[in-house]
Length: 299
Image 1 (cartoon, rainbow, N blue to C red):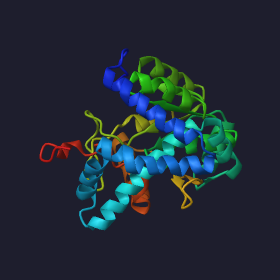
Image 2 (tube, helix red, strand yellow):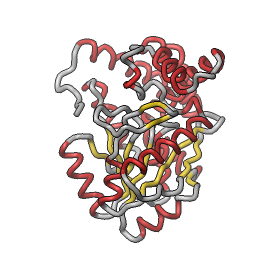
Image 3 (tube, rainbow, N blue to C red):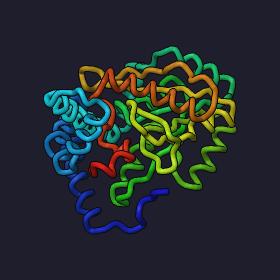
Image 4 (tube, rainbow, N blue to C red):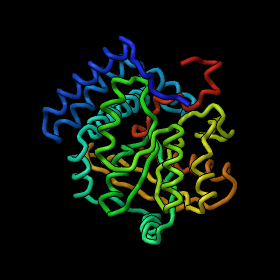
């Protein structure tokens, strides 16, 4: 299980200094300027330096081979822009959460399930992905008076992780690191009737043999296994960035029907695919989601 290094390297320190400099430039601006500024910086500086384009192109060529070159370039720009905006929103903390609360963006056929389950003190598992802005979902639920926990993966760069962890904690609590102590706390929270957001859209070496966009995509089964073990509904939820680039619609989907963990998580993959196809630039195509294909085309 990946954890941040106790001591960073010189490269880690330099990388963190560059990130801090960009954030300082962004945070000096009013919110309405800060968010698009970071989107532009991600498109023009971060994406080229980090090699985003190559990874995005690999995924798009595999999953959507009929896309034209102009479409691939447009989606690549949108992915980088959404990434930059998301970082700025996370570091805007309380201001971002307050704006989400004021807009009350929650809707969808599964919303009443969340409200009813929490009122009854019963657990819920939210199936979430790196789509739109995950933290807009947490802020929206908290604004409705719902308590939602989430699991997060500490960053490998310890210099960056120190301020990143602090930033995400300001948006909503509780947060559980992806380690032994975090898992123990997560189980305790679920047993007490908590609602927990679990990600499922990244490659997992020992994941189940499922598909995403029709391609082999080893998938984490734990959201479904937790749902079955604790008699909790598995509810997909997505924070969709709106055309203005700043506001969101948070869509709570219908719970996935209980079944085998494999069937439930395939349903989660399929629903995410529908959402991504409708908003291609909002999913983080930079992730190496289809690693089984990398032996023939390294990225």
